[in-house]
Length: 113
Image 1 (cartoon, rainbow, N blue to C red):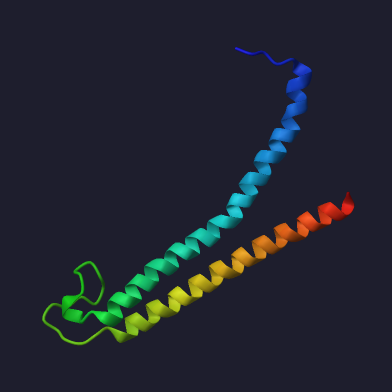
Image 2 (image 1 turned 90 degrees about the horizontal axis):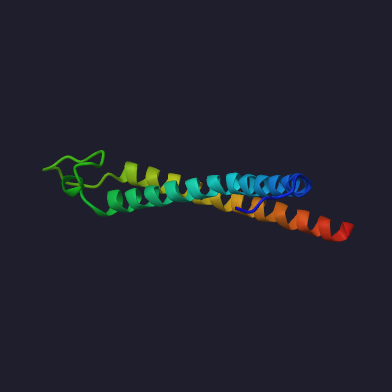
C-alpha cells in the first residue's frame, strides 16, 4: 500500500474535485440529449408501425390493436411522428447549445492565456 504524505494528499483534492465536478456537470448536460434521442427513436418506430400496419395486425401490446378490424391508425401515427420530430429537434438543439458553450468557454480560456 502506498502512503501519501498529508501535504501531497491535500494538494490533490482540489484538482481531483474540479476534474470530477466538471465531468459530472458535462454528463448531466448530455443526459437530456440521450433521453430525447431515445424517446424520438421509440416514437419514430411507433409512427412507422401505426402508419404501415393495419389495426387488425398491430402487436397486442400496442394501443389501438383491435383484431379483426381493417384500416390504419393514422391519427396515432401522425402524432407519434410529430413527437419524434419534436424529440429529435430538442436533442439537436441541446447538443448544439452544449457544444457551443464548450467551444466559447475554450475560446475564452485561450484568450485569457
